[in-house]
Image (cartoon, rainbow, N blue to C red; front, side, top):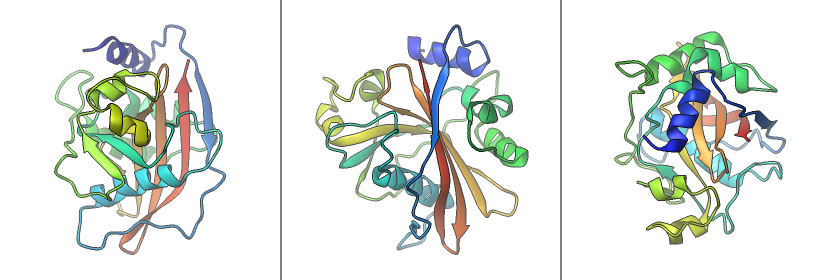
Length: 217
């Protein structure tokens, strides 16, 4: 486990060791007419994750705490986070400043990602899923390890084109299947940042209703 993962695990367990959460902002530029749908049958997970990442690419809020230089693509790490800390029920709403998620939806998110023991997460593999061409899926360990938009690792060229990277937990869904929540580590960020997205189903599509980022310093 890397130093960063150990630090974030401690943070997720409520032991921040001086880290302060700052900068959770709502998106002021959401177009309610913008929805994301599939041209062919895909799983809800594929369409929901794609909706989040394409929304991020089109999100022009100047207060977003992360941004690369060219902002042509977004990088999706091929597996979800190893540890469960940031989707534990007592953590989710505590980092939201402007919104609250229903307890039942938080519990669904937690159950979906809970691993077999301790603070392990049940990891989801995104590498076999189908996404828009602006979403690059791969092992972006080198990019995630860099606190700045540029990296000298094997994905330096991709990172230079990217607005940012996401490492998404598997989505949680409401009992009626009409609402979804996505929680993700995002970057580049010096000490890490968490994104929370709430989506609603619109027929065969999913629409982002709001999102918040929380950066750690």
